[in-house]
Amino acid sequence: MRQSERKKEQDKIDNKESRRMNIAAAVVGIITLVLVIVAIALNAGISLPFGQAGDDEPVWLGTWRKGYMSLGEYPQSEVTGRALTEDIVHAEYDENGDAWVGGTRYRRVAYEQVTYHAGDDAEGHDTWESGGEYRYFVYEPLNWRILDETDGQILLLADQVIDCRYYHNTDEAAAWSESDLCQWLNGYFMETALGDKTDMVQETSIGKVFLLDNDQLNRYLLMQPDYTTDDVRTACTPYARCMGAYGNLTGDAWWYLRYEENEKFTLRTGSMDGVSISGIMAHGENIGTGIRPAVLVNR
Image (tube, rainbow, N blue to C red; front, side, top):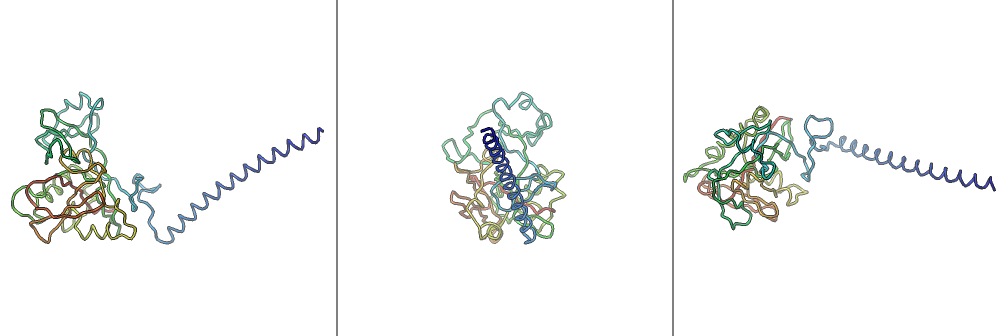
């Protein structure tokens, strides 16, 4: 009887040890499979996501298939409630509406500074009504989608609509290179958003900071074999919505494209279904078209 009990106890120990060995073998198998897949991808010349472990750039997670990159910063999230401290409200803001508080940069916006007011009943638009109060936004890192990598250079497109501006501020038609938007992107925006990172940005025939044109939209987004509507759809940052950019409840925003074939018109894109391109006058009133800049940088 005692021998039988000892045998049962030994069988239990053997079973537990067997389960441990099976689990360990399964874990080793999974790790080996992952390493094999990575090796095959590298040998086949397939690019791994930008910012992989070991790179200097941070890892950015998301659905964009070619990866993300962080570069510069710009006003984005609105500061409200308890986060809006007295120090922020009473800081000394410069002529651009910027102030540093505790090592963080903030943007203060007055109603009169907003590019486009849609009214309090316009779906998809901010409904800020006129009044004496300011609104406050915090500068945050800008995320960019990697569209292409060639010869050590990376073509980047802002992941979201980041502002709302006029394409041109007068009633005169303007080609891209002569437009106020081109001047603003390559002047104020570049200095404010990119700062000491400006040296990374390459000069092109259309400026250091530019907009995609229709051909680039097709090449890098619409004509990709694995294209989905999420490749083109994008949301507005809270700051861009405050400035007048349109973005409906599903996060779809209108954004300018560069268009130089007819200097009287430009293009904009965006829709709930992914993309809908329409021509608008390249001057006059902006009715909610946002800015989604692009840059070419050194890797």
